Length: 635
Ligand code: COA
Ligand code: AMP
Image (tube, rainbow, N blue to C red; front, side):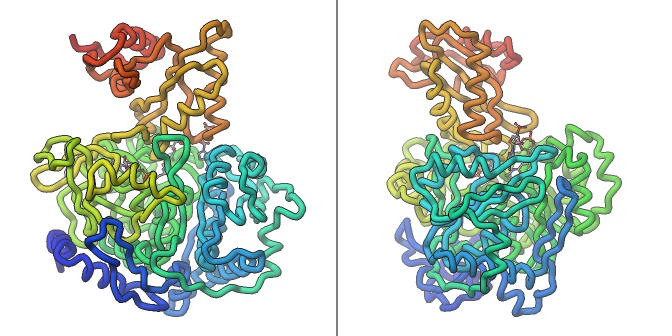
């Protein structure tokens, strides 16, 4: 069997052949004659002269080829007590009916449909049904507030919205319908209609003429067949945080997505068709798109859809129960989930109650995997713990340890080595390559591989300026890090205002925009501070308008509420302090990096460019009063 280095070198020597070979695993209505439109074009398209359908590859072909009775989805919901197995043939039936209903209501190829659903199988049914008719879905995570949903409605201009009536968060029921109604009110663009999936925990009242009951619609619908689309047709748009309040609409092209995701299932996750694969994330995030929904189904696996939390539903043994009961072979989650379990059950007593003999590996991504968590997980599960690094923009692993090809030695703190398709470089500000172990900006040589974003929805200029301008010929990842002598990569920090809270990517810039809208706030800054459980948490600094005499606590409470209302509970914005001024350079740039160091208790030096050095001491004192920044500054 080929070793990793042979596979990687094989790709590097002939990317066209590598991807054409990989494309053999996909069923095309019209086979592509080429993988790339032009490898010398940094923005080349992939498989654009092929014709294909995502849903066909995820469902129809498996039903035709002997997997009709195999379980496609195991729905395990400790929050409702429901466990359900859905076969490939039943899933195909449900998807075809919803697709038919959408067609009958006027949805056509290229139309956008927003999906605002909790973790129920119908979320996957909706995604696949939309893809089946060549429409483009945009799933919005349930933890976002109405305002965020409205922003996405205005950007994606969907013809329809498919929503659940409620989500269940531990023991709380989240009523989605008021959020949906408010979002539609706030948005300038109005969808033609909404489809509501009613859950018994909280049924929604339907607005006559606009809202339709899911079950009613499909009871009258006839099944729709797959619509052939070109390889570069978008299958979905997924919004992710950038540096401003306007999220970036990452476009996922159909053909490359199918080819690349199929490739990852064996080569990276080391599963064979028929095996049970579980990604404990949410369909609202990229991990959920790629590894709860698409990749396992495209590859003929059984995917687990888990509606619960790592702790509290009902206890810190819930992950072990699911793995053991459903014979999970490969498991994927964010390190924060393991930190939550470790906090509740540090000795791992609950693991001992379950038979985890089917589990072969644990995969972690979404945020930095701290060595303590890796070592703890390894000890409990006794399987390789694989850190891998990727982004919404790529949709699959950039740097990882490809167990299905070769189990490379694990180096704690590193997600290992670049996957085929990715030529990863560490660059200095001038675009020159850094030496081994020197920290720099992580960039990927263009063109990016199949399945990665070709541009941003409605925002090609922003795509160019966010990713391509800093280092001509390269994609700027927004992460900083270094490589070691064996080519292992270490991801150290973001270079922009994006923070990572419990594996959720959030923009401090977006939070600042919301805080600035508070009538008493003259100026503000938000930074990400280290947090033992969630990796990072946002922390706000507020400068209050002159003459405001209301209590500081009251203003802070209002600001916390405002972020919850405008961005959503998932932002986990709970702490802010009021300061006289913000530390700035003489040219007026807020010195966020130094504020982060002070808050984290790291050593810090007063920057030479600072306008007024005393502000830093004021900030340090105030942060210490609320328990941040315990270390002394260097003199
Ligand atoms: N709908 C509505 N609200 C949601 C939500 C959803 N889908 N998901 C989260 N929220 C709310 C939570 O209820 C919580 O609200 P609260 O402030 O009222 O308590 C808030 O958003 C923060 O949620 P969360 O980040 O999940 O924190 P938590 O304290 O409830 O749980 C963990 C902490 C570590 C257990 C949890 O973050 C977790 O399981 N993380 C796994 C990581 C993961 O799945 N990452 C996805 C990328 S791989
Ligand atoms: P998202 O687009 O939500 O997947 O977030 C992508 C960002 O999360 C990356 O740019 C990194 O900053 C961070 N990230 C994801 N995986 C890892 C990892 N394995 N190690 C360190 N950071 C990671």
